[in-house]
Structure formats: structure tokens, C-alpha cells
Image (cartoon, rainbow, N blue to C red; front, side, top):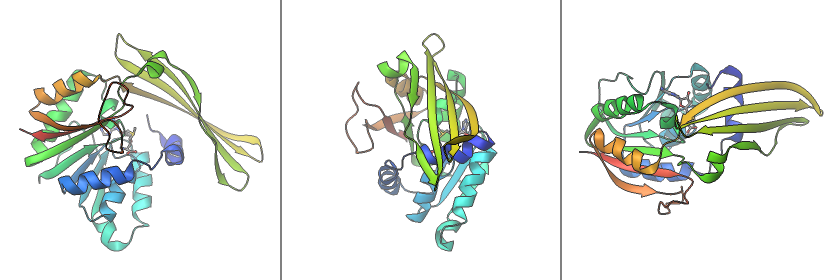
Length: 248
Ligand SMILES: C[S@@+](CC[C@H](N)C(=O)[O-])C[C@H]1O[C@@H](n2cnc3c(N)ncnc32)[C@H](O)[C@@H]1O
């Protein structure tokens, strides 16, 4: 998952609409912030630009390479506020405590078993200071997703006659509660296919009540639940479930 070539294409299809929401939220919850599954660092870098100290952790060295390249382009003061480390969100070691932890854009769903999910939440709890908050941003299972199928995304013009297309094949299995996606990136130069990259991604299908139980089981109390990044209330029709939970 999140290999070398696919990581290079990730940001082209990764909308930025949710960035201001997370900036407002994390500024309110305070830093230092632990960004787990930080990927290419889009949110971590924005938070650093807004004045927060951020530690970003990801298991993919390729996603982190891009995060570090983007960090190197920041003004020095912002650059110094953000650091990136390769590690596992279930066991990342850190001596100081964080005021808040963020698992944005379904990162937490990359943990495929209940045991891994509980281990991660317990670990985050230990890394949070008294009164610390965790933010879990998840994609709740919905009819269209469970049905599966093929979605062809918009194509992105990279440079002059270079065009990039992303196609996603989705299969969900309710027995294992897993969603498997094959993501195909196709790069065309002057209308001719010049590169094709396949990425297999597997995520957990996490149902809302299950998420709240996982949090409760690991010593967190849900305090706010949003259904979108406009701050709307969560409902069965929501395509995001963003839970802010406090360490009990
Ligand atoms: C869907 S991406 C989200 C990236 C990022 N949060 C963002 O805002 O774009 C999930 C990320 O979680 C990372 N990841 C998956 N399993 C992980 C684990 N056990 N520990 C740390 N990172 C992990 C992947 O490498 C990937 O970069």
C-alpha cells in the first residue's frame, strides 16, 4: 500500500477542501499535534503554517519522501514546526506528550483488525496529555461503497500535454468488514499511454456505533461528531464521520 510510484500521484487526486476544517479544529484543540498516517503531509504542513507544532508519522517511506519535499519549500519558521517519522501508528515511540492526535482521511481504517485498532487507540491515549483529544476522520460504509464497482475519476492535466487519469475498482466484503480497492493511475503524454501504476489498498469498513465502542473501550469519550468538513451534524447519510474524543 502507498508504494513509490502511486505516492507520487496521490496529491493530484487528494482534494484540499477539508484542510481549513482541520486547521480550525486543531487550532482549537491545541498542539503539539500527532498526525498519524500523515501521508504526503498536506494537513500536517498546513497546521505547521498555522503555528502548531506537528509530528507526522506514516508507515510508507514514499509518502514521507513527498511530505519532506513539500516541507522543504515552507518558510523556515513553519518548516521547523513540523517533523516526519516513519513508524507504525500502533507503536510509534515518543517521550513527550501531545495535546491532540489526528488520524485524517480514513488513516485509522488502514488498520484491518479490531485488535490493531484497539492497540492503536490505547497507544494514542498513552501519548496524550491529561485532557488531550483524538480526532478520528473516517468514511462510514454507505450503500454505493458496499455495492462496489468502478469509478473513473476526473483527469488531471499535469503539464502541457501530460494528462493523468485515476480509476478505482472497489470490492467490499461484509463478512470480513474489509473494502479492497484497486487504484489504477494512467499517465498519457500527447494522448499516448506512457505509464500505468496499480495500487492495491485495503481498509476496514468501520460502522459508526463500532467506532464509538472502540473509543469507549480504550478510555476515550466522544465529545463532538461531524458528518462533513463544513461542520455539519453526523447522520446515516453522512459521507464522513469525524469524531473528537477526549481522554477520560
Ligand atoms: C488514506 S492515506 C491518508 C493520508 C493523510 N492522512 C492525508 O491526509 O492525506 C492513509 C495513510 O496511512 C498510512 N498508514 C497505513 N497504515 C499505517 C500504519 N499502521 N501506521 C502508520 N501509517 C499507516 C499510509 O501509508 C497512508 O499514507
